[in-house]
Image (cartoon, rainbow, N blue to C red; front, top):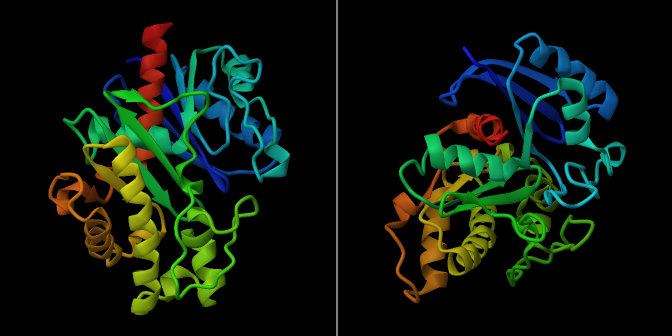
Length: 289
């Protein structure tokens, strides 16, 4: 059997997996995100012992995805200071000696959901994670969305609600979507983490308003066939009907959309979307090599 490797590289942990040619996960390893050299040396033996044919990586960012750029495969201006300008993919290629494919963690999750999850059978989808940060990845006509760089949809500007005087938590933009609606913003505004505010209707009405504004913009610009929403904050299931209701009000019948209960959904792969997508990237990397 040919084995493939996958890494979902996050700010707090690296989730690693071994899979087969069908994109099925066989074995997993999770390690904390520490200093780059220590983190890499902790995961290399896992892939070496399985003699993988290729590796796929979905990473936190920003990252450089332009293959003709000297910084291709680097983690760029990340808030995680130790990882700034770290050559993640060159280092993995050097130590493992196999083809490596690279994208953002949310792009990998979008690919996983399109191929084996909640958007299976479609040709486009958007995956958005709402947790410690907010990020989104997209597949359009079965291709991951990259341009000059990769999308940073968590940092779009939204209209601040008239009842909300919160200054935002994003160090770069203050009251962008992430600054107003990510998990740390919820805790800073209300004084408790999201999981302790489940019964507070005001919290989730405001949260749904910001997320619905973002989904309206994504819908008008990308027109995905399905939007999948994951991450820790979206485990508050009461958010889904609120977001659908507010999105319908914002769009105001300007464009046709599918039924919203099938248009805005939770991940079909649950917490495995990113790793599954990274595994599919590894299979593609081997094929291209």
